[in-house]
Image 1: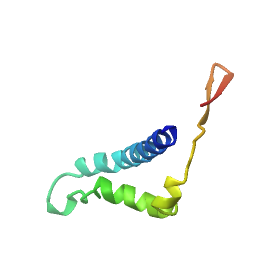
Image 2: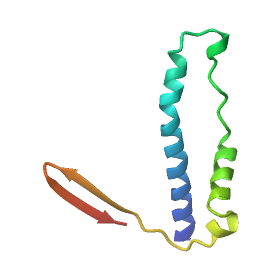
Image 3: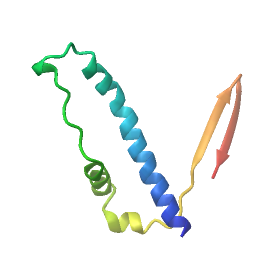
Image 4: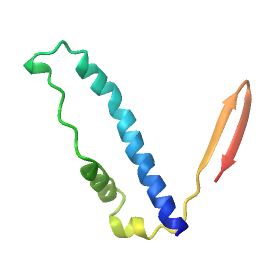
Length: 86
């Protein structure tokens, strides 16, 4: 059951990253002065984004075969670095 939670967390991270990566483009589209020529492009559906991600990483079977996940990160502040693994 933990493997399913890891896969779900990984997919949410990808979706969140894609949403954040697209935010500047959306903001620029809103500042574009209006008019028919400056309409923002239609965004893909969540299903398409996840489907494209699954295709890029080798398909549903390959993702389903993931049995665990390890996350590593580090934080630097005031010249000190702290690292962690989960």
